[in-house]
Image 1 (cartoon, one colour):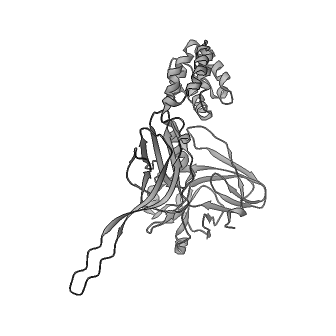
Image 2: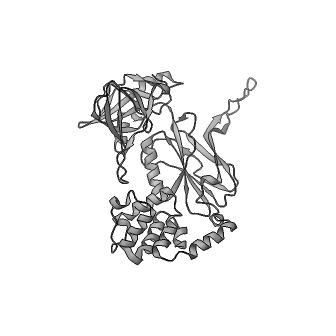
Image 3: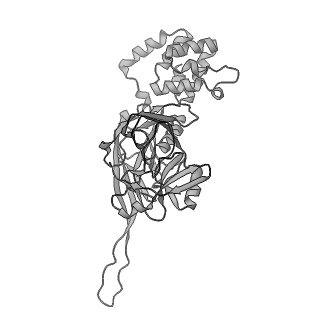
Length: 404
């Protein structure tokens, strides 16, 4: 059952949304063959079953894996069965097996129990998964033996800095690891970056190789010139793309960067052969178009409102008189994700001045903008505007601070 069509894809329920903890995903199924749409985990069950899992960080295990001569080959997941039984379990991996059949013997499975790390043999390897020999659970992941080059499935993550007159992109090339993606996303979101979703590379890329990023717009500045593809579990490197005045759509192209040695030229007998010539080669492996609509909150912000819109904006500003109306008017300029961030900061003790009380999350979680304004007026009175300004700065909406 290697074909993805043989498996019923299911969306897991997210049980924990605490910003300081890794989310917990839970699934419940009847008998059948299934695949989780978030983790790519596959399982077979002959009865009703319920289980949950969390993504774990590789960071504290990396040094021991290197001593054992292994590298991560898939996400590290802590799985717990809460009801029923999983008859077969297939852990996802990101290694290319198509052009190297010998690589199938180099797979292993990590099993972390109370005694430490245990490396186990695998019973079956497919192009995308490894079958567990026993459906016993704890933190589990697929491993690959070190010592020879491998190709892996990759993702390209693109983030842009919001509320700037220029365009600044941070572009990550990482293994197809949902846990690492969430780590990067959390880090960038906390600093006010927004993601630009684009398709990932359609081909496997070679580990420990250098890749260069180019933009077909003359004003783009990109650093570093080359990034090496490797697994950094917490702090992967990235390209920074800076464009001072982005006035059009443009393409980003990722290329495999290497040096190709030409064959020495043959000479007549008695004459020395010519030395081989080293020629730099860039082989494109992925490209995407970055459109101006992909980064609506950066680049040429002064043109955000047209001349036709100005009378309406002036009228809206002049008719707002009360503190609550002023705050509500600015909250309505937020997108949904920004509003969620605003509420999250509002209930955090370390983001509210010591002489101001916090509003409990239980009162904020499911309420709309008008109710948030009511709660802020009740809690802060005339100081509600100052608190709003502080939180706008936290979510990198300095433009709204000026308007408020």
